Length: 605
Image 1 (cartoon, rainbow, N blue to C red):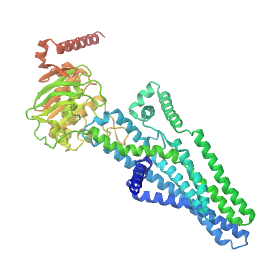
Image 2 (image 1 turned 90 degrees about the vertical axis):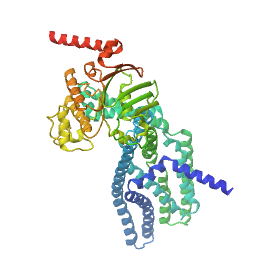
Image 3 (image 1 turned 180 degrees about the vertical axis):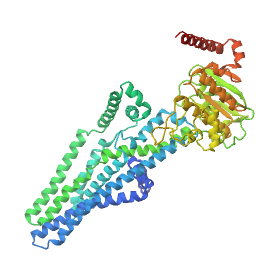
Image 4 (image 1 turned 90 degrees about the horizontal axis):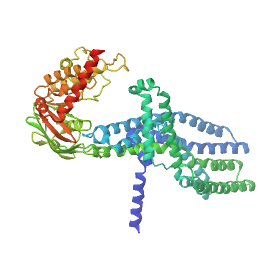
């Protein structure tokens, strides 16, 4: 029997520790131990001060009734009331600061969770991005107040509950059953109305509303969408969409947490009976003379004050914050597992010496669907350039991501000099690889950081800018954003040249694999040709992978690969593929005819 009871107790403890509320309070010392202890100490102190007010007021009334000395009771009442007034703003400041510290700690955890995995699969998982939205709600304030306000609401609720306990303890001076009767009745409301605080946010409907509210919020506040929102008159639409989705969340919350009739009825009946019995007993003893006026006042006030056990903000302020904290804690392991790569410790110095080879490579993205690559066989000799062409969705960018080591193939292997890329240390390999993507990042940081994020001598940065045709950008300390003092913005073409300079700077620092994934898509044909001519000249001796939809550019590569349905359809030089008369010739002629037509129209105009 004792073993069964012990097992049951352990099970209850584990169940308690699995609750989101427990996890919320458990992380407070990790955010700030000092503020956490001060926060709890103030809760306890403020919680029991109302009981002291009750006692001191009863003593004052008794002194008046009995013509006793009033100085002591007056000093006691004044001291307690002044202390209550002083501690309230102090607790508010401690709560706000602890909330800010907790927000910083949670942000740190989220940054680590999203950036630590070597791969990127976890960032393209719908399930995990939905969980990330829930996790970030402590800062977004979509489902509940931000953390610095939440801590104040939670503190106020706990203070009220502690005050209720203190008042119930006073009732023990009247009768042993009094705190059990009145305190138990008010505490029972938490169990009777427990369904009013349960909200399963991990549902498709809630996640969809939260995702849409977050999206429209970002449309409103981020500069990237500001021009089109105003140009197309979408300001009112954006506000209306955010309000509608925010209201949808409120309605879903209400639908799940509204009070049920039967539990509410039982709660009211229990409270009426318990408090009625207690007040009737006090009235009886007062009439009989068993209690003095001071005692009657104290126990009556304690009876009323015990109701604080049931009131407070825990039922609405705590659950969203606790859910965010629990989700943050769970995201780290889940993202680490999803984004992990089966990488080894082999160093990549000197790679590639012979080739990069795709051997029977198949690939499917995390959310499933069709296979993007299906049994792909391809060899890229070291020191040569290979252009990849094909229709949209043919797998061109996926192939580049696999070479970068951002993903692992679902089937087959990507090999570098006969070594499976999964056996190579990712950080070591990525020092050998550089890339210019179509959606390259525009860092709101100085020009030097944009060209050399990991640092380089000024001479190297200036040379890389010159190699990219951006030699006019020489003030390396200028912040590339108008949102900062002395900052500036660049044109689209200048930004593309900065991105190219970033890749060329990496080549100067030892990278030997260069990936160019539609890096100049916004340039005209002549501007793109000029950039690629520079790139191929400055990266001579590197293994270069070029992805472009313009055939006037790809024909300069050593070889051209036509991808279709995740496989190599054609492979050869420009002249060889033109002579073959296959898909490459078909696409080349189609684009050439369009270019000639555009040139003719321009000449006529």
